[in-house]
Amino acid sequence: MAAEIVNPRSEAATEGAPEEPFDPAFALHRGGKMAIQATVPLRDKDDLSLAYTPGVAKVCTAIAEQPELVNDYTWKSQVVAVVTDGTAVLGLGDIGPEASLPVMEGKAILFKQFGGVDAVPIALATKDTDEIVETVVRLAPSFGGVNLEDISAPRCFEIERKLQERLDIPVFHDDQHGTAIVTLAALRNAAKLTGRTLGELRGVISGAGAAGVAIAKFLLEAGLGDVAVTDRKGIVSRDREDLTDVKREIAELTNKAGLTGSLESALAGADVFIGVSGGTVPEEAVASMAPNAFVFAMANPNPEVHPDVAHKYASVVATGRSDYPNQINNVLAFPGIFAGALQVRASRITEGMKIAAANAIADVVGDQLSADCVIPSPFDERVAPAVAAAVAAAARAEGVARR
Image (cartoon, rainbow, N blue to C red; front, side, top):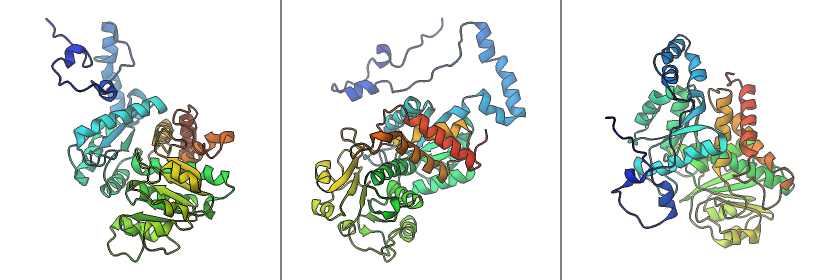
C-alpha cells in the first residue's frame, strides 16, 4: 500500500505543532508562503514518459552536446536564486539563516507577483565570505541569476564582486543597488518638479553601510552635484583615520566640499537628505537645509525624520513606509530588472542597465508628478514591464545580451 501523501499546509500536517497567539502574520505564514508547481500535465503514462524517462533523456543528451540549450529546455533562464546568510535581515540584524527564510520566501513571491520571475530562497549556514562565494558558484548552473539579500556590510561588497567575476549570469545585491535605483528615480522627479537638475543638488546620506555606499556612488554617476556620507562618527572624510577600505574609497569619491564634523553640520544648506541608517535627525538640523529641500527618510518603521516634521521644511518627502506618499520600495526595481536581464540572457547587470531602470521608474509617474507623487506605487502594473523593457534595451546596447 502506497504511503499517504500529506499536504504540508493541511490540518493533518500541522497537527501537534506549537500553538501561537492569534496573529494574522503567523496565520499567513503557516506552512510557508510558496510552493513548486508543475507547468506540464502528468495525467497518464504517456505524459510521464515525456516529462521523465525515457523522453527526458533526449533533452539531457541535447544539452550535453549544446550546453546553451539548457536555457531553452529547462527553467534556468527564468529563475533566480535569492541567497542570504541571515546576517542583516530587515532591521533585525544577524538572526541566522533559518530565521531569514520568511523574508527570503517573501522576496521570492515578490519576484513572481511583480515581475513574473520564478525565484528560490536559499539560506546558507555560513558567514565566511569565500564559503558563500564557492557555494553560490556551485549552485549557479541551476539559475539564470543571483539576487543577494540581507548580507551584512562590508562582506556583501566582496561577495558580490567575486561572484560577478566568476559567473556569467546577473548577480545583484538588492540592498545596495535596488535601493539606489529607486532613490535615483524619486530624486530625478523631485528635481524636475522643482525646476532643478541633479547637478545643482548637494546631498547628505545618513548611513555608510551597503545601501548608503551604493546610493552615493550611483547618484554621483548619474550626475548629482555633490554628496557627503555620514556614519555614527560623522562625515566620512579623507582626514579620518578610522575608515574601513570601503569607507576610504567612498571618502575619495564624495564630499567635494571637504566638509568635516557631524551629520547635523553637513545638513546646513543641503538640498537632499537620504536616510538609510535609522536613528533620529534633530528638527533644527532639518530646518537648516536649503529652501525646497528633499527629505528621503527611509528607515522603517521609524523614519530618521518623521514626515510631519519633514513637511515643515521640505518640498518633497519620501519614506520607506507604505502608509505615507512616495514610498521608496525596492520592489519597484528588482522584479523588472531581473525580468529584463533574463529576457535577453544578460551575462551581468551593468551600470547602464541600472540607470535605465531608474529612468523607467521615474518616467512611469508622467503627468501625475506632484510633491506626493515623485515615485509610482509598488502596485502600479506599468512599472515592471517598463523597467524590464528598458533594462533589456540597455543590455543590448552595452553588449551583454545573448539574445
